[in-house]
Image (cartoon, rainbow, N blue to C red; front, side, top):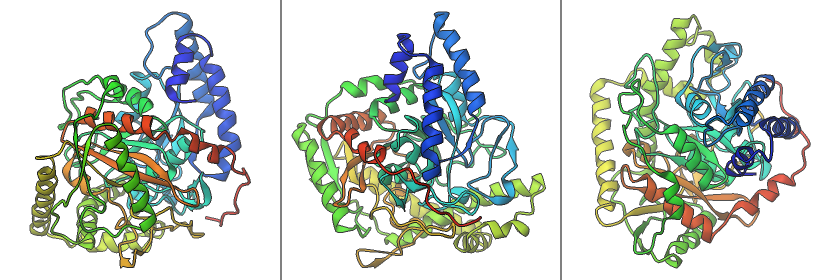
Length: 494
């Protein structure tokens, strides 16, 4: 069921939160071993919370929009008191716990009424668009378990697509909500920067280079709006948090009739696999059916796709290095013994980035400004911008814990870490973006489409997503996940 359906049944007392939790636990125990979507579970704790949730229903207490709905958070920079935090499967951190909440966990439980059952898999430090690490291994795609789920919120997207959960947390500094949403055929939403607070410490200002987000991964647009109603709003601990509330439910009733939609098949510079391009080009036409005008446009980007991906890696590394130095302060030998837990590509970027000067970082911000201006130029004449989420179909999983994306797309060399993702430019700019399931490949693999709105025009993006969902419903595609064999693939020892 969707989160909205579960919450409705609980609210009407047609089903108990305990019954929901028992079914969820059974579903996860049966299906997770063949995916490695969840890497930590707290089922006893979750069931106790379900008992308390049932008491609140029977007492007639005020209920949140997701009361009694099971959910999960991500095992990266995402926290719940006394739960492990391995920063994406770092072996030396497998017993490390954190005493605190991330905003998503805190609000989805305390405001939303959801019950968090565990943590989902992520790549080490989130520094790639695939989901794999040396501790837990890869997260397999429920549409084809030989392929990867995408990253870095890959465990969350796989769990949602497979029906183990109806909602899970994604975080996004380069596409980590939208990449796995695309490959797993689910809905991923990255709100305007500041809409969902992000609490970072010790540096509360670290989430701007690039912009860092928390948000929901769901199977429907409606479920995402329920999550957002709990997640958004001012938080004094985030210096960039917006003090504004929105009626997200209104987006489900909206229309795109008369809107001008810009369509870019490749953001000017990205090579895109022909099958991906064809599915998205066909999907865009749904907006014309809904009364919108669709224009193919050029964005005006002056950097090559390799220059763009290198720019993202350079801008992302200071946040990563700060996290590593925080571990050093906790007593972990990150730059010595722990180096064995990092992939060669990640180590190369650490070494490269520690030599970057402030002048070079300032020059990168100038390049970022040029990207921002180009995107803003599109919105001077159009209401929305649409394009593929990714340039390629899901890749095959590696056997060594180091799955990466393709090194070449449509005959052009790309960075296998993130160069095949048309997602990270919007982490330079902070615009609201959704990834919607655009269709399936000939082999039944999901293909995603990004819908981008003006800064702070979240309702426009959600409305367009809802209109597309009505015209091109995707929920039936999850039958392929439901009916897959549950045999656990053989995994190498970690």
